[in-house]
Length: 240
Image (cartoon, rainbow, N blue to C red):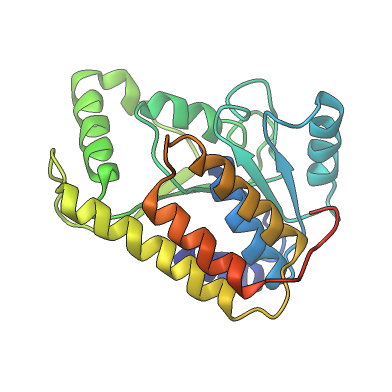
């Protein structure tokens, strides 16, 4: 999140006319991003499958307006087909998909007829996690299918990653440590706030929903939820 926010703030200063689409497979990740955007006073819209078609249409309309929000938070599957978002020319992918073709469908929302700017795509990879394996598999598929190497005229793609090596089988211990560190950072970040915002409430509900997928609750998620909830005891935000 820090790397993403650093890039967004840099673009806001150096490229104020550019708009950005932040893509993730997980709504809970978009909820977390929304918290950070509100703190830094970024205006944003959301586009995801849980929204009504009318709400999605309004989000696109607002985003395409030159004076509209500069950031769109988009779920990967909802943004896969049928959209023309040429008002944006910068894309951030927060998590990798098993198929690079699915990612490219989302990237193509901004790289379409009518795009007059260079398109920049940034894919973030967290080292020592399953994403190392996903990236390795993607590269293997590209090697086996040269059609995935189709060039995109006028576009430049960059990849932000924190690992030089991409092992096929990541260490389970490293994955657990990475997850624990991530949830610990969430707890520490939220503990510095006196009162929760509507975005934080939405994020907490997403964590709670995710935790319900585990029969007895996931120990790391449960610990994180208890820590954050304790900070906001007695505080409720309506309409979160």
